[in-house]
Length: 353
Ligand SMILES: Nc1ncnc2c1ncn2[C@@H]1O[C@H](COP(=O)(O)OP(=O)(O)OP(=O)(O)O)[C@@H](O)[C@H]1O
Ligand SMILES: [Mg+2]
Image (cartoon, rainbow, N blue to C red; front, side, top):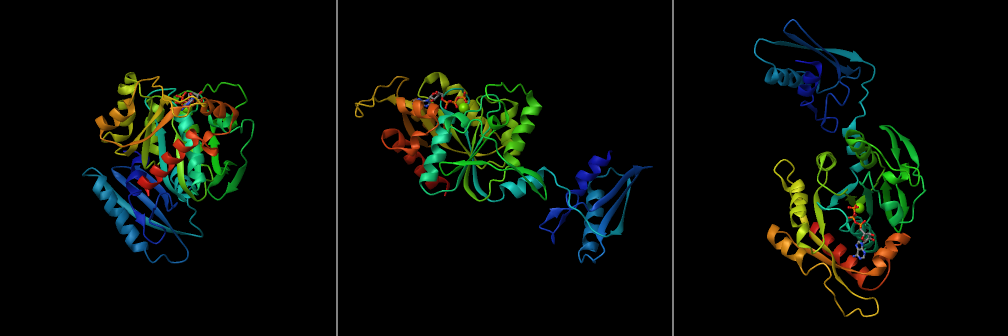
């Protein structure tokens, strides 16, 4: 039995008068000791009498009795202090920085290179065009695309001191708030973070950003379904996911893995639907023609197979790639590409709303 375990038990006690936060994160547990089969806990109360003191002492005793093995005694006493200072922790960051965000949606796929980032960036711009307040976090630590796709490379986000610690201000362009790990790396320099470091940097990059009031925060997920993904899905309070795929059959098993990442019983997040990208090629000069380069309706069939909606079919259009490279997302313009992204945005908003 360690002090940390005792703290975990005590964290089950919530203070109804202080936003229902737990007594550990409120900084009320002043001392924990474990010796001679006895657990001793000291709770700190401010000089001004806390009307809930008796209740909290009782609840702390009950939490210990529930968890401690038989034979281990527990004692809870109290001390009066001038001020109880809450501890800033990940939960606080989470609550303070993401509390103004209404819907957090992951843009994912099991497979690389299917157009997740293209769809995420254009969807963000399209939602903004429809009047929603939107942010996008580029969660690809190894190959961030947002700085290029929005022509914001080289810009440096500002930091701001707040009560809970330092937070980062997102960049704003095209009516969208952007954040990417790419803003923190030298241009052209590869990020060589290993697993846990990458995970932590990522979480910080999403949780410590001052997103403010947003209707949608999109998370552009990195390709694959590894540890980073699992940690992201568990630690960022994502509400649902959109899966991007091409019509090619070979992508089916990867898509299945991508879907399972969110749907498995430990995570249980909703899949809003599938976006089939690169559905057909339409020459700019002949918008009525369609060439099915990567097969036909693969995404549609997948959606039916997994029991989810096909949210959109996005054609291969030369300007989508050119605009992505130039940092001016197609969704900001006119023509079939912009229309495809705008109708995707409208459908998504309808579904989520
Ligand atoms: N509908 C489209 N029409 C034309 N080009 C496209 C389309 N969708 C994506 N592309 C291009 O395909 C390439 C890969 O797209 P993107 O980077 O968005 O994929 P990704 O799934 O995010 O890749 P990664 O797995 O590496 O993160 C980019 O060059 C992009 O401009
Ligand atoms: Mg990408």
